[in-house]
Amino acid sequence: MVVVRLPYSKEIIRHFKHPKNLGKMKNPDAVGEAGNTVCGDVMRIYLKVKEKGDKKIVSDIKGEVFGCIVAISNTSLLTTMVKGKSLEEALKIEKDELIEKLGGRGKIPPFKLHCSVLALDALREAIYNYYKKNRIPLSESLVKEHERIQKTIKEIEKKHKEFINLEREVL
Image (cartoon, rainbow, N blue to C red; front, side, top):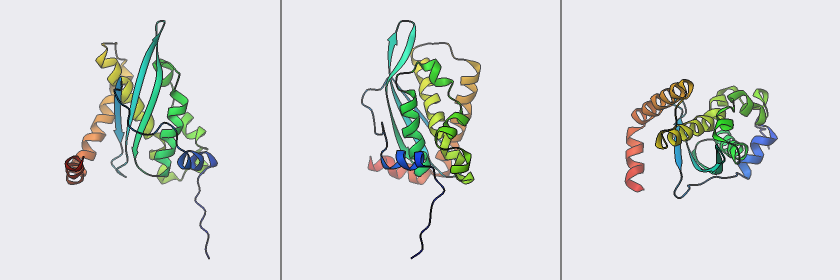
């Protein structure tokens, strides 16, 4: 018998086997979606936001994932990192920080690094969505991120049009 060991960290395996905060949220305050044109992974992040003084706090967060082990794990991990933080604090989370918490670049196969940050893009889209809906001024960097993410989503939709249409018919 041949045993193949995947080069994933314990953190990736833990969040994959026991994911946190996954599923669709009823009546979210904001929704963000992001994807990758290379692999076709898509993530959706749902937020509930409460005001605490002058801060907007993530009171609840859920994610839906159409993707691999790393994509599922990073969505689970990110939701645990963000819950209870202000939207401003959530926007400060960097891709390298998320990769490090997943075990670092050495524990994520190089061809899966793009999967390890997709949830962060979906989170930024959800925050962008919340700001737009509530007429909160958008930073230039958040607008640029939004434009990049939307371009990628459009490319995915174009590339996988038949599958997406079939999925919409079923749902």
